[in-house]
Image 1 (cartoon, one colour):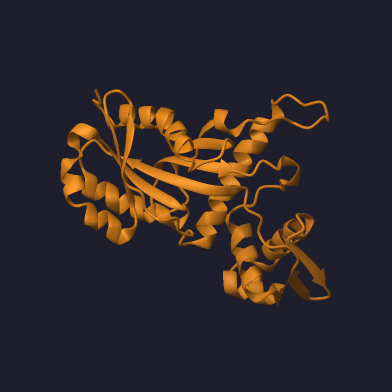
Image 2: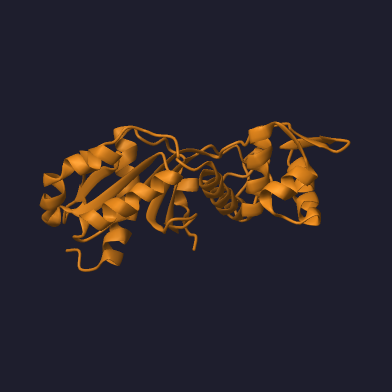
Length: 244
């Protein structure tokens, strides 16, 4: 049934979210993203369980903004000179970023001091990355492990007919806590190994992924209907977005 990896990815993107939801691994507000690249390669599929408090969304932070916020979160209190030296950003760039962070209520300033006001608020409550391969499970395992930099769970998914070599080496998956899924010709997803939930390895990549999700939701809100209170009714699980 699965002739190409592209076809395999399309089918997994279609059926995997519902399979996880039936298990209770996701809530109803989920969205599927393809080719997610926040560093260390592109994950074929990422399923995000989303906190849809859309009124709380701020302007989207870019990589440099996140680097500065991360430093302020680490130190608690700093100054523009210190930020510029640590990030190697020019002074006027730091000033612009600090203003943006201040406008978004992440920091406050007093004289030369920059102080953390609010911690970074994640929109993604839970994330599941999936790397799909027709046969090469070993390569898929290495790729899937890298996605733990930003995802709570990471899986390799193989066609059931080609999965025996990977199943025979299941201890290699367990050693790095990467899950293994199989999918058959009837589109049934079977969990061979469910890893424990983990925190993303890299806080900056975690925040970058959250910002990509926020961007997608804000785009969706532009065309979404309003409810009786005048609030937008975005349904994340209907969105399918690609980030390159």
